[in-house]
Image (tube, rainbow, N blue to C red; front, side, top):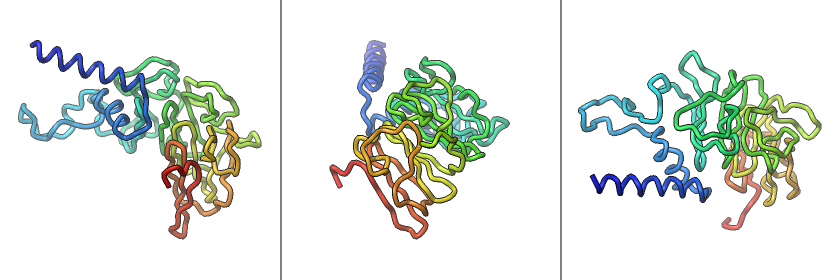
Length: 256
């Protein structure tokens, strides 16, 4: 019994440290978002009770949520998933750390089980950053929520949002032709149906690709990209795959 208490105390301490000292690396992401919440990985198909059904012991997911997600995004301490296989298809559920509103449910409270993001019913893609989240909707518009102090929500403001806000272009119009999105630590990028890439948020290392290091709280287009088919975003850099199979990258290059 004493050994169990010690192990539990150690796990609780590690979890608190993961929240207290967020670090943008896969180890902390996997631990904080999956191990802490016990919601991502099922137990062995041959567990100690002899149950051979994968996912039957997903401790962090309610039974009605199991096997219903079509895609998932994981950050340092929160998770968002696109619901795709139930009557809730097109909705987004998030769980984990909610301090900046990154769960999108109108609260800044943490959630240990999936909770619906307010107002999102037609999502086709979802991605998460350090403390913000975004979804692409079927009409090509992008909604973001959570931390917005660096403009990473793209709604022409620099404030946090507890519920989704719509991404605007630098001209004040809604970004309305996005097909894919990916988020970095404090910036966001989307591929458009026209093959352009639009980015917004922190720009200290040129990760928005507009030729400046000026932060942007609305979407600006990456210079010279007109045939993009997909985007991948790191903490402080971004890359796009083009239609000819080549890739273009921009932003922090300290390690090549």
